Length: 471
Image (cartoon, rainbow, N blue to C red; front, side, top):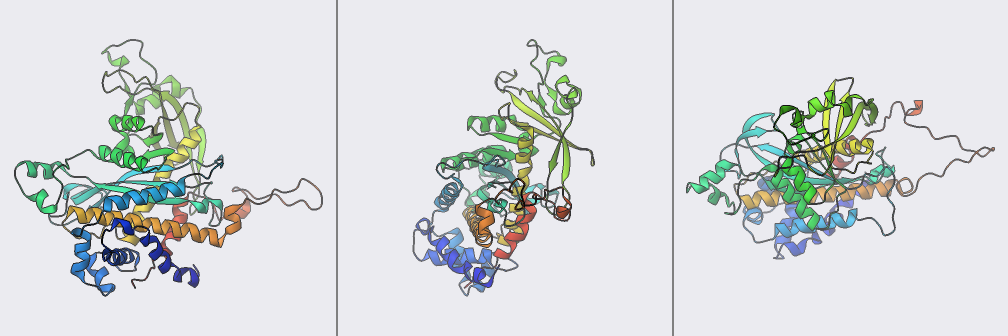
């Protein structure tokens, strides 16, 4: 980044935040709004209310009240954020999609934050992904999206036009909190948790997030998720009901039918089979040859997966019989590490398995977004005890991530306007003016710069933007 670009971040952030001022209600809250967002973008080691207020020369109590007690509509702010993203992702009139453009990909995942005590909304001893064990923590479910109009490449290539953001978040409320409310305890009341908020499966929360984003105008081409969500058929059928195309990882014990059973029977041989067994013993798989698929990455060598795919049927939750709708089961095998991954998709039968896998592996983008949100924006630094404050903190973190994504996109266009806007001219055929052929990824000139997904590339381009001054 040039000094001029860094100096322009302050005015750009002010203009960005003013576009959301109608969600704040009172004009005086706009100053606290700006202070909090600038604090999330600052270089402070801890981005909770007190350090941010002191760094800005403000009052700690005033910023605490802004986050937890003042009347402003963070739900409307979230909707405006999603509508802004929808406008940026909408294709231009008459535009055609490049062949290597998978479209807008929805990213569904959860994250956890270790907490001490028992006052933070939703805290209890449960599995904490951050520490990899059962721990005292809260769990939040998130929906993100990414769109890279062209194949990933080095900065300045059309792949630099990617937009990746978090769209929505919600708290997983454990059953122990609901039981305390039923028993007459004051835990939920003290935390300000609404009476109508019940314990819901994380898959149900994720469906609500998708439903809300679609209602705000975002048109997803795909939804991707890990096996924690793929193991629940109700979640898969819920995405079907929302009209979403999806591909997600499923556990090896997920059950399906590789072929329709000849009759309705309780006999074991006519029952559904685990995908682990289907991919190893079913004729629809064993008579296929493995098809190589190369997953390119930038900072390390590409990974080669070998793939097989075949149609399957799932169990209808009402009748227990195979579904009328067919699905696609894909097994990916890494010969080098002997790792197997199982994916299920509702994509049309003619969809190329290579496209499906490129979409499926894009799920790693939400891990990158979590990393940026936690390390650069302070997503995990909330220290309050109120439900409203927690939800507002997550919404403001999403807003700041959108600002970073927009500025990253703008800087890429400013730095490489030709490469990002138009492809290079084709070489002439023959003659003394003929241009030498362009080198491909396998040529010697590219040996020390392998192509990759956008995840590692974005790591280097997001970090310098978290430099916005507090004043």
